[in-house]
Length: 245
Ligand code: PGA
Image (tube, rainbow, N blue to C red; front, top):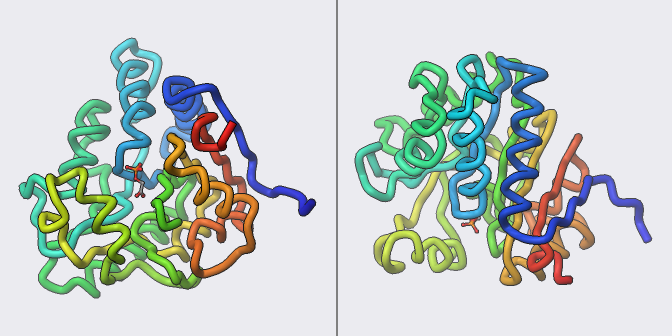
């Protein structure tokens, strides 16, 4: 068997996953208070974010100097649209952690010049000295952020068409597939794969096949997350249901 480069941690259930994910993030922020961190939306990291918020309430965590980067956004939606992923990030993690807006780099899906906004995002990543930790979920089609298959590992932050699979999968958040925008912005794989650390959180039996392909399969454009096998300091944190035990 090929040697696995990613650090794979399998925990009993979603609660344990959320605690272990919060431990990893809190350890980083303690070691590097001004860390630059990409934050995924989606359902999987919500427990981790809740756990971090609890620790902050108890006075165990100070994130006031960390910088947070939005991972992806739907095209054409302002921050006040109920489907805005910035709004999701704000509700689920930025507000509970009391992160000042000045410490957040948005990916603005409503920018008048989307290409310029994407270039500005990549410039902000460079200006921050790169990303210390990317907290990512795993799409049912293997996407990271909205880097859809087939994916180019050198891709910059950009706008793109969502695949049917992502539209169907995200329909559950918004009450039907017609509610899901067809185009999106995503931090490019070039940004994500250059991060000094990655935490990929995966929960539930419905992710079993794609998780195995991500970690054990060949590194191929059809499974964007498989490129993590070649990235530095990757932790895949999965519950038993996702790993298939
Ligand atoms: P989920 O989303 O955490 O809601 O499963 C993951 C993704 O589609 O990237």
